[in-house]
Length: 306
Image 1 (cartoon, rainbow, N blue to C red):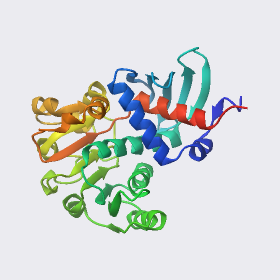
Image 2 (cartoon, rainbow, N blue to C red; image 1 turned 90 degrees about the vertical axis):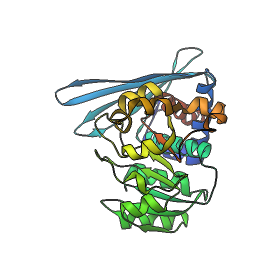
Image 3 (cartoon, rainbow, N blue to C red; image 1 turned 180 degrees about the horizontal axis):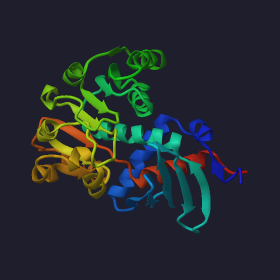
Image 4 (cartoon, rainbow, N blue to C red; image 1 turned 60 degrees about the horizontal axis):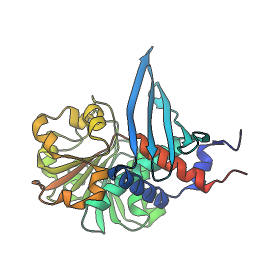
């Protein structure tokens, strides 16, 4: 059994953030070419708790799988069942907490690489938790970000110090207005149910990634951000428009719908960004099953069974 099950500690040792970024890029490329497919998230509820399931088939890597996790008291514990798409046999059962940390930030970096036309950027991060830290790693470890602005309700100073110590990137704590107005890239990684800043404060050309929630009742960016966007990139159009509160609660649904494009087709045809009528770019993350399957496969490959 120990050969089948991979825990979070093993995942952390088996895969680097750079490897995760490349795995996510290849997975969405394959999806954009029609080689991979996903099952959107399904949630069932009882007694105040829920059980969520989503999956995917990764054609290029010849694997398929499903991610299952409970939500109890606002806490999660993820697991991914990975199968061979050639034989149908179980390959690995991967605990998914560390995997989810990696893949969420890795996909944001993939989108930024496709949409942001310059390097050496000022990065603003709203939040200081697990995903805020993961995004700092994804954008700072290779020097893409040269300054980090931290806006967080808790542990902001400690987070800023850790960024400087881990990546050698200057970091400082700022208020929301400063973070929004001075950054080239703004990442919101919170559990906020209301917008974190005034979208009018953003500079033209800013890239905004809202990754904090996949609940239709929670949002981190306001209607001004969406109105200014030339394009809104999502992993899955259907799932994002159903789950992403930033989009679900948008005032102008018709205008929003015309701006939404999926990441897979964008990676296949970068020309989809050309001519977008807007001065900023938005990425709304909800998390889809192909991410978990692709990264579980990379873990499986990097940890061969005896």
